[in-house]
Image (cartoon, rainbow, N blue to C red; front, top):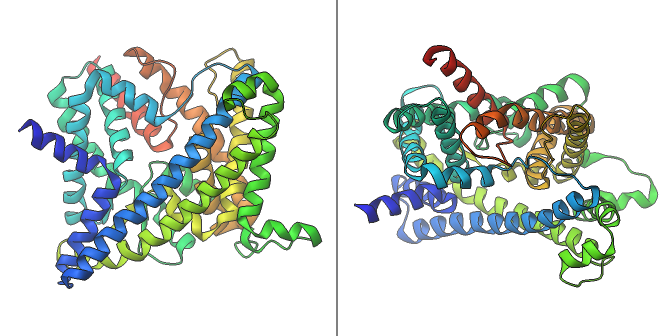
Length: 422
């Protein structure tokens, strides 16, 4: 029984395997040949692993940037990072978190089958993060394990189906289709970015169509634009940190060479991510036809945020930089107010800000990309500051969740709970 629980938890917690199983099911339901089933399933998993590998490489590069930035500017405070706070929650409530996630996935399938919210959330790690957020929030209210598991699982199941629906009108604008959905719990910010873009910009003025003069035409290639813009960020942080600090972090690599290597590594990571996403989509979308036709009519796979990067690679850079500027402004405001200082962690700011930039660009071109990224950067700074006291209440300190959907759910559940329980 213990072994079965571990296997089920590992399968549901592993996004590549979960997506591969969905592809397998879809191909079987379509009665495809054995070789097509094997090929489609394996290529789906490998495509996901390719973009996961790119994401890991990006995280490694961004970690270096964060170290340089924090030491260079002498900032200490709360680092909002879902992976970190989930790990802390797991040390206290491992069984509860895992059962909330498993029950939540089952509820997601039921909600998708019997309601108008036809989305299956396939970003396994994000469901794990949401399970941790729900567990921590209920525990802060003093609720028992059993109620936490049941209520948390039901809420997670509905959230997994309903949040993608919130962003879907703008997801259609991004992809020019209705075949995939956003499976990343920052849909409030992404939908807001799309709405803002529609109000202030013109989708015809896309970041991908910018008319650049003369020598600046090199920026039309997103690899070049990413390499140059991210290099500037790294060199600012490296100069602020100083030679000795940089070379201690780099393991002896020259302090002026290290930032360049890291920026180019980040660019390579982005290229890997986009390559993996394209491979994944070429397999998972056709496979989902089988699930839609046989089990859950009109169902759509909700996939991780890098799935939109290939649609507007330049917008990802614009969104990231805009979001990071918004986060930095909030950080200085927090410091001036002598309140909890939320430090903009580069990793979530890249993935979230980049995605917001793509959504804003789809409806408002470059103006939408800038505005969407900037507002999102503010939201993922203010939200964690509001949520952090709940984390502290049960002894989890130093980190919190940056995702807007988590913040909204956590605050609503906690304060409604306080009204009715106490």
